[in-house]
Image 1 (cartoon, rainbow, N blue to C red):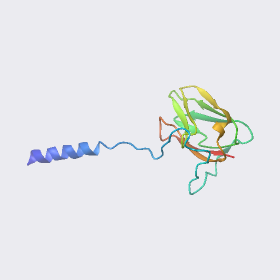
Image 2 (image 1 turned 60 degrees about the horizontal axis):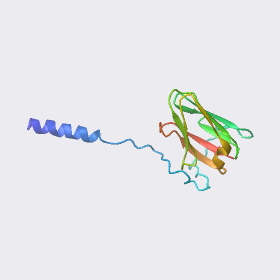
Image 3 (image 1 turned 180 degrees about the horizontal axis):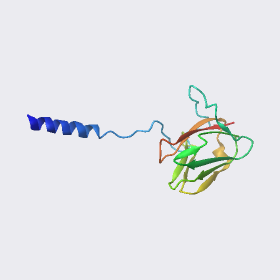
Length: 138
């Protein structure tokens, strides 16, 4: 009887450990946006976005975070992404419209923001799902 209880406890413990991590947001294949803006969340875009409209914009990655986490830019602007971490990151716009990988300590310039139409776009790092932000194109 005692062996059965121990075996049953071990089986249950192993079963509990087999769950897989599923990030809350997923990205689709490149081109799925289809020219339409992402739908804003029910509460709308964040009100505390850093306004970088009227010029090219800069997004920094450091300490496994995007800075700023919400960025307002002009349609057609260039976006420079600077990775200050010692780890590779990506800048991946929901739906796969933009998916840039930045090696540790590198930077990249996205010309005309991939021709995104005005709208609100969630973005994240493919390698580190908790790294998220919002891009508002005006």
